[in-house]
Figure 1: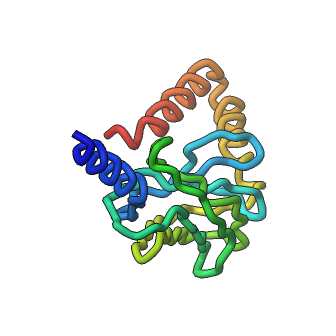
Figure 2: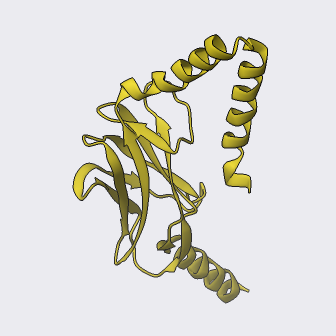
Length: 173
């Protein structure tokens, strides 16, 4: 009986010494840093943007690694990095915040997050459109211009609402 208890104790100690290796990462999602609105598909230049990596996949790794490091690149330039402590008993994260970044140039911005845990690493990348903040007023000017020229304010506002709803549902199609 004593040997059975010792064997069980040795298994429990060995199981608690296991660490988990990163086997994959999923999509990058962005959140507006000022308003907290997200996920967003376009970013404003020179404004804070929060980067999140979703869909992290974990596998058993017999090493003693208990940290996850990330480095976030925007257009090939390192913008954020950090370390996250891992604790399998509390649950391994399915997503992580990979820092706050600023996009400097207009056009297509390439985001890439490299995650490393011991010997295992994974990276995710995505492209987003970046615009100057002045572009945000264009839809309002279009609606006002149409309302003034057609003199059908209700029709123009209704069509604007319908277009906005359909546009927001795009990922579901």
